[in-house]
Length: 431
Image 1 (cartoon, rainbow, N blue to C red):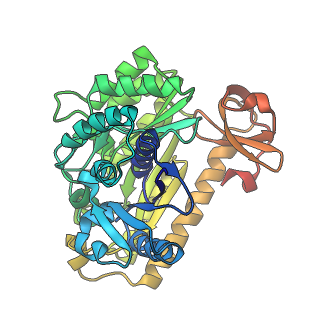
Image 2 (cartoon, rainbow, N blue to C red):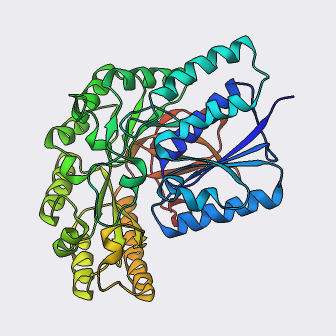
Image 3 (spheres, one colour):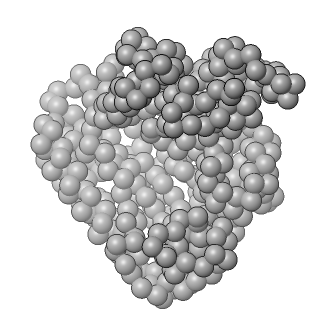
């Protein structure tokens, strides 16, 4: 009888990419997906205390639902506080970010129903695992549960150590795939009839630095060979967003005009306390360069509200700075104190009520920016990739510059890129 599993993922697209890879491997080995499994696998996040609280809640929920099941916890929370996680009721095994792939040979060792086919896969997987037992190695993964879009991991870890972030400690040192292996993965994804790939990593722009390659070289190779129809960059640090990358995207048909750039604060004083590697002047320069080369480009920004030592004047400076920039929308996070980070010890810490107020202001500004960006594109024609996302007779998709589009359902539109005119703005569907 086949053993069953259920994998639940918290956090970033990188985690989703890895979870999808793990699920594929287990299914290839004869394990079956089930809502009432023998093995619960939880891929965790440590970016905020809320993410860790959610993980603990899910572990308790799994244990109540099926006390006889094994609960295997993997990922960043498991890496940051292994002793805490492994002592939670129901948890039987913990694998951190650097060795989460080791859960596959662990499960194989517990099950003896292998066939010659699965024995071959076991040999291949154990070889892969041997490459990934330290945080200085790299294993590539991509998601495949969504036939329209795949998240491809090209980089992992981070050497930046921003003062608020626990991810660098949990994920380890920066390392990445090679250009040629990424191209092979893109070709494999294309064979799944997937039209769009999002390149993901902890610090994506750091790709190749330790391999003697560069992120630009990868993007340029993608632009030349065009293994898939669309490629997006998940996120890139402003200091790593070079002029040549901007120019390449502006003149490409496969690299989408969609940039996700973490700012975190519009105050140079706060950026210095965060140990970010740029100032607001550089950030503004990059935004204006993008808009000069691609007036239609979508630019999303990450922000942290209520960082320790952030004064009211610092926050007002951030709001003015953002209001002056031609950006499209904001991802806003209230500062969350992470253990063993320098920011956790900074004084003064901003009150939760103040964080909430500042987050609300930034979210309102994001809505204003997004409405302006969407309205600017009314009565223009854009290429839309329609997804397997159908609700109440309506099908949804995204333009090349990441505007969400809806139209009456047409089965022929599924997983197709179609040129459409954007005729009406609807806030209900846009956000």
